Amino acid sequence: NVDDVNVLNEVREKVRQQGRVWWALEASKGANWYLQPQVSSLSEGIVLKSSLKLAALANSITLKRLIRKGIPPVLRPKVWFSLSGAAKKKSTVPESYYNDLTKAVDGKVTPATRQIDHDLPRTFPGHPWLDTPEGHAALRRVLVGYSFRDSDVGYC
Image (cartoon, rainbow, N blue to C red; front, side):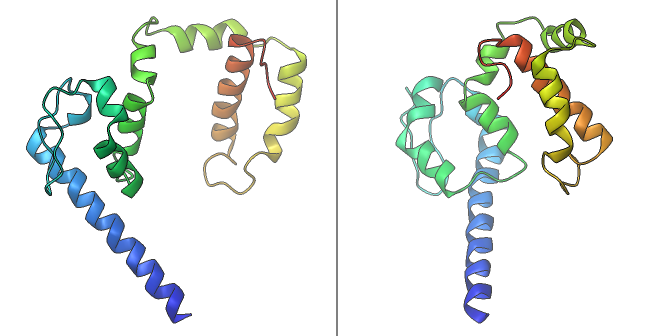
């Protein structure tokens, strides 16, 4: 359908334009500009006050507008890791936390691990990575680790 093709082309162009905004910020402010404690301005006429701190930046209307227009896929992991608060939380635990947790739970059998093992083959069937032995193992480590880490929630 011609209308569908036009809509897809419009979306692609908007994504490209938004990518150019983010890459211009990377070029002018340096990599990881959104991690900096202060941001003085953004390209394309979008301006933030230089006194904004990172916490305020995450809640700012301008950043929300940028995010809603789209974060280039290659930047998404870094941006979300920072703005979600995960980076701050991760900095409060030892680097070995995840490895220590997976070692501590390795080989333990619980109702949660039995359910995870039952559900895993049915999770994301046909997904190019998750439906592989490596993908299953990685997802299992995360699910089992979380079920032990937050036993009140467990696995659901």
